[in-house]
Length: 587
Image (cartoon, rainbow, N blue to C red; front, side, top):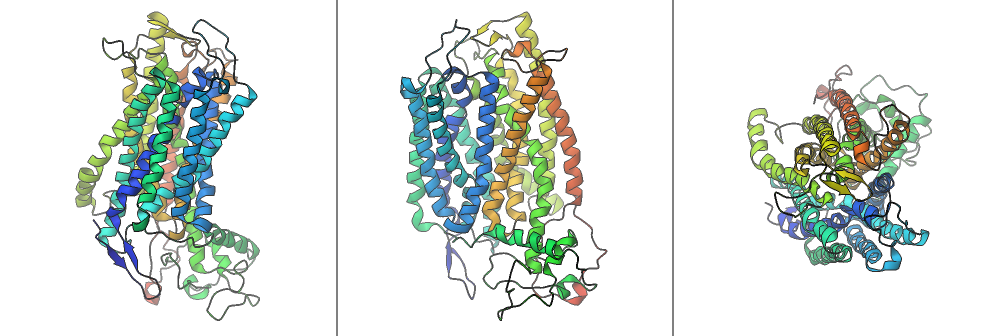
């Protein structure tokens, strides 16, 4: 733990790092924020199909598009945070905006004229929402989107800002913070998926949606209570502009030839004295980008050593920062396909649960469909402390590496487990459907027969999904944070959510294609309103095949990937690597 450690340089003001003392406010804010947001979003699929009377496919696609747009908006939020407002102000404003969004959604349940009339169990056709009702609901979605755009990419980076990155205790604090952050995150999800979802499904939607709004208001209060002890990093301008400059200048100078001598000796080598970014050593990957640092007679240099026009000349340090971003992108594409599994666990699995025997033992208590995802969170919650406190120290003693294994190895293990998850999901769905056709125990209104298979059979696939998340999702966040330049950490956080956005959009595309094409096939529609008449198991097997191919792609990318290193500003000739030395670090 850090105890008021000071990080002082000759040019920088004193920064009082409070470390873990600031965590109760930051993690408290995050916990209540997630309790509020997830408490509403977790059961939104059921809300749209039961209260707003939407069809399964329509509701699923709406949720996927909303989740995708929300996650993609984090990129914009991160840009605005890093460029104009800073993380402290961004999180505060967006947390309050999320509260307003949850309040609007609650009002759709409170007032009868804001949702369609109730649809009785025997009614096969139900009246859908009017344009005005959908518009009011979508306005709530819009406010949630704005809130998530700022909170999601900034809270992790803001928490890490509280630790001194130049001390051993600070580095350990940052590493441990990532794991404990996800622990509290999953704990909040578990509470939302059980208590709050139960109130919504069995007591009252108005009360059940009001609880998350109240929790979000508490999140605002907790966050501002810690204002006096936070380290508030000021925005340093647009970090994206510097990356774009490299590509623009490299294109302008594409016809020039690179010098024969080592680039660190021949190219424009300037580092701003107040830069927050670490000095990066030269790498031989993406050498075309090096042309952005070629000095021509037309390029003018200021007295302080910087380029007069950064859109005509970039420094080699700037080029290396751009390379860091480019190297991450192939890994990011693999993450998009990986998250397909998690998307299905939060959407189609809910419909599976509704057409399964949800009774707990011999009692009449039924587990709400959306609450089954608590097993995913439980698996993740149980594993993360074990991994952080037992597995990592054990692996460190064996491998001698920080974290025990590399971040790419951690992510690869999760992708492999995700493929197993989909195979198990397909087998379980095949069993559920078979029992629904041969031994049903009832009928789900407007859906179909309820299988006699216990819903607890869904636990194995959810447990595997949670275990997969603890490897890949946590590894991803830490990977982006450490591999991006320091002034792009909010952007790095948003990249994780942009990957999830891509998964939501990809899932929507796959569901639409499969739904439309399978209707004309000999096997019939794979994803009809009544799952018993479809072949959801085939859809799961298809995703399992995609994950296996994705694992192969990921291993190739990992073999090629070169981790970011921190170099010295002074280059000794005997330390200059030969151009042929282009070995990369494996998984």
